[in-house]
Image (tube, one colour):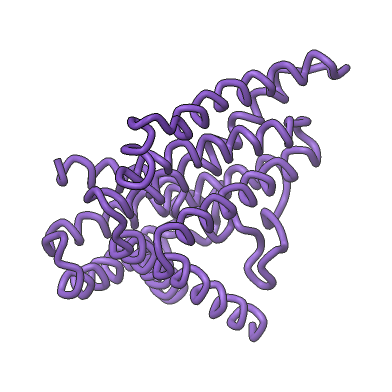
Length: 278
């Protein structure tokens, strides 16, 4: 329990620091984090399911994240590209080449199910990289880097997890999806929604880019889709008969275990922010 608390404390410090140290640190941190999550996914799949193309998949995932991230640097990169520096365009052109490499590698392997390997290679990118790309994009939803929204997202997500755990452990009776996660209950879900909504109301007093109603809406989206992401990750682990996605975080499991709530919530919240900001 003590080890879990210490790990959780430093984990929170690192996550908060990643949003406060500026544009480049933020982008680089989540590029690395997404790559580690993808590698963790591939290691799990290799145990008894398929043989994904790890090098090609990691390369494709990193290029995809970096290529989409660069579009949110209008002053530094996009304007210079229009003046003759085609760094962004060249990077984007590498993405389909990396994707083709995933297919080409299977030609040189003697495996009974090559398309299973290909499918799991791309599934890992969808599962572990694209959600972080959407989360990264939240910081630029207004046109320039603003750490308020990604930091608020993390605080609300943690508030939801805390509320769901406290209420679920004390009052939880009605199972949510017992087949995938026996400890998840409807009472815990409601508790998470309430606690995260309170956190959103508090954040709304300090981060005035959005109204309090919009912050509360975001908290509800994070609670509902964050819980679904948790359940999907549990379903994934049960399908390959593992308890934790990894052991990089002592007492907490793997990175996918810690970011399961972000996997589905980040794309949904970004879409909501995109529409209300346009």
